Each structure stands twice: as structure tokens, then as C-alpha cells.
Image 1 (spheres, rainbow, N blue to C red):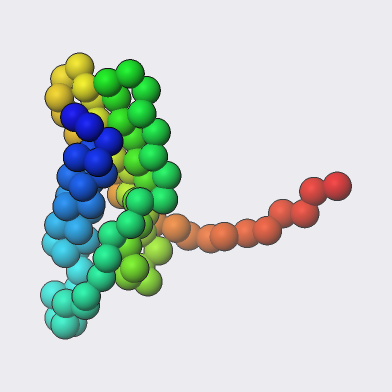
Image 2: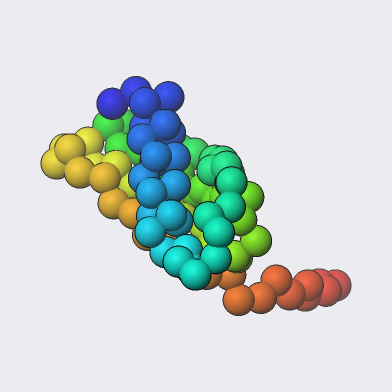
Amino acid sequence: MGNKEFIEKCKEIVKQYAMEHLDKSDNVPEFDVFDVWYCKTLQNHKALLSTTLSDGMYYECTYNGDKKELYLDAYKKFENKCIKLD
């Protein structure tokens, strides 16, 4: 799997996941999926993605090239805290 193909597949998967987990009582908003970080090592890929929804979610996609499997992890941001260092 190439870099571009991997990122596009991840965006599809994240969009589908987000749509499935939206509150069904609300109107479905328009939103985009964007990649935040990407790395490839040998036949394996990993990307961090998010959406333009203000839900605090971010996603990690990992492709295992040996097994031809793609894994999705979904995370919720609880806090962004500044810690001053000397």
C-alpha cells in the first residue's frame, strides 16, 4: 500500500466511524477529516487524524503490511494542560 492510498483509506474509515457515532437526534453536520501526523517504516504505516467536528476526538490508524490489516484506535481528548518547566 502506498502513502497516499493509506492516508485516503484512513480518512474514509475515520469519516465512517465519526458518522456512526454522531448523535442521531441532531442534524448530521458537514465535516472534514485531516491527517495530523504520518510515518512509514518498511511495509508498515501509522497516521494520527482528526476531524473539524468540535468533539475532542482523534484517531490513530495503523497498517500492518505483513498481515495486510488496518487497525483504528479512537481517542477522546480530556484536557490540554500547560506545565511550565525551568
